[in-house]
Image 1: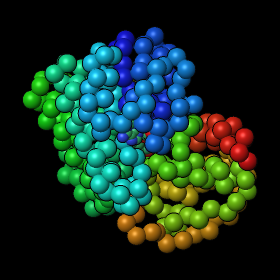
Image 2 (image 1 turned 45 degrees about the vertical axis):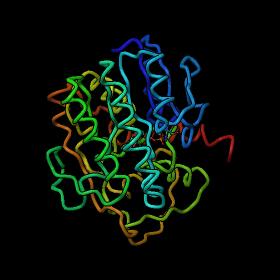
Image 3 (image 1 turned 180 degrees about the vertical axis):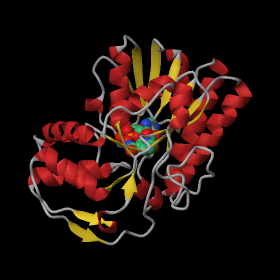
Length: 310
Ligand SMILES: NC(=O)c1ccc[n+]([C@@H]2O[C@H](COP(=O)([O-])OP(=O)(O)OC[C@H]3O[C@@H](n4cnc5c(N)ncnc54)[C@H](O)[C@@H]3O)[C@@H](O)[C@H]2O)c1
């Protein structure tokens, strides 16, 4: 594991867990984050926090050159599908230009980058499931398109510079500290509903499925991918429907509330499940936390986080 690392987006949900893991392994960590959706209080006090926008090439270059990292984990992103529909230009700026900035600065310095892309928003409804990495993407949202474009730059810069950059296509990540706005935001939303005794609305009548992967497993995958090149699905290979997630959280909470069932909203994907076997073969990684266990851990942690506001 690299001793000196940069985590872009380290004030976000997944990034903050990665920072903790790097520090626990004895690393020196700098977080680069503009705090647009991240929170400074999520950043481990042992890490240094630089508040800057990855789209600002000059500032980013100065920061990376000064830090001289051994590895960069590039998680900073406009990470909301909804926001990407409202403002596709800003989504493109951050997810495409920001990513190009990162690999274009890192490559001549010989610093490997791990880029977090999306598996859930990339393959579309027509893909066979579980979907392998060689399926041609068919994203339904600007967010899926910008992540795909970001991947292209990461892979091209890896090939042309010879520096091994990796793309990790994450499933629907859930766990402590998650925000209700991300791809697996439903876990945070449902947890809050259960905590305050509110009836949730289950779109698609609770039937849409996703590949829910626990954040601790994702962190292990990102660490394993550093210094490797290639594109890897990081997921469980198991599809779970929304009703199962609601019921699993209900069990964790010890609360039963009958959900309201509604039609799927336009543009929403019906099903998603990713084949993680390439990551198992190439990175020696596989998800270890099962859904029931992960939902219980997440509910218990989120309730502590809700406590001051509810
Ligand atoms: N959560 C999921 O289920 C999921 C699934 C697939 C992929 N991903 C990807 O994983 C990464 C982390 O996701 P997350 O759920 O932790 O999201 P998050 O929104 O919690 O974290 C993203 C972080 O990036 C920061 N950021 C945004 N724009 C920036 C900019 N211009 N300059 C600097 N920092 C900026 C935000 O402030 C935030 O701290 C993202 O790249 C996301 O697209 C997440």
